[in-house]
Image 1 (cartoon, rainbow, N blue to C red):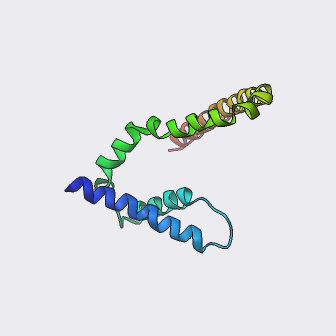
Image 2 (cartoon, rainbow, N blue to C red; image 1 turned 60 degrees about the vertical axis):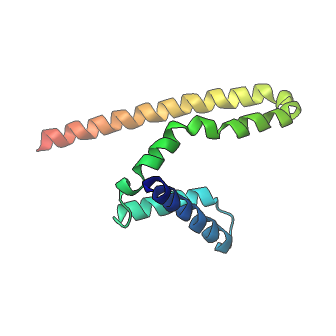
Image 3 (cartoon, rainbow, N blue to C red; image 1 turned 90 degrees about the vertical axis):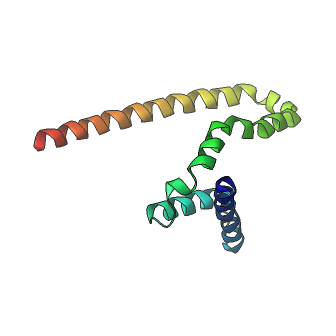
Length: 121
């Protein structure tokens, strides 16, 4: 029964986010609205992590499964991707390098600020 309760909470948040998406005068993904709504509910202590822990752990553990339909549907557009394969590979390479650099810079800055704060105390 606990699992059904947790599924109900998660699907209710998804449902509310889709309603909000329809009400907005501009396009905005319902999935992002749902994540923001879930964050607000957890931050304001309206919803506790324990209320959704088991189901969210299950969804996170099986996340790769949810990417299978998107990966399979790429085959339908293989001819389009084939003509731009080098461009896509180049973009993936550059963005990967930029992501690594941004992560490394963030970690360095965080460590520097932590050392400064520790030295100031």
